[in-house]
Image (cartoon, rainbow, N blue to C red; front, side, top):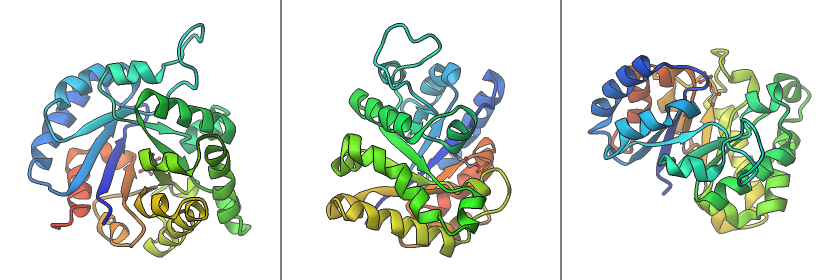
Length: 253
Ligand code: 13P
């Protein structure tokens, strides 16, 4: 049985004051939630604060992006080693906002994924189709094309140390959640795709769902056989909502 992971993606939100209030409410709310891993992916400048507030709690933390380069003359970039320096366990790579707004190609994403693994981080690799892709019947080929450069560069075995997040672009920040059945179908497809390379790794890899997950729909989504937790945007900024979502992922719930 795969342990579920619920990761909050704060995106470009927060201040020192609001982060502190949020985490000080979240940590005690999650204290008795068992059998589920929870993590927060914070903006770079707040990683030191998150490290300070979450060290010694059951919560892990991570970043939302990482450079594909190790070190050197790359102004404005942040390396995997720097993230490790601040205690990060996870880093999101290939979020659809980075693909759509910052020109990240699946090849760049594959380089970032490899850089994260090399630094000892667990990449959370995001894939997902747009509404136009879905309506044209291209969901599976789009997801396959996003996975392909990662499989080519790092191999299927690398997914023993990675997490996948299926985030349909049309469900992100829109309030439109994929139905549990729609999400399950793509999660199963992702696992089948990996299984053509390595069946054991495909069975073990956590595949998270992201896109308008809330306290009110989390349990249904997490009840599907191939949904191993969630990547939570807006709702992760609310301690109560995030706690409800994490509880919904607990086998004790
Ligand atoms: P929302 O939960 O706000 O839809 O965002 C999902 C997401 O993009 C998480 O990475």
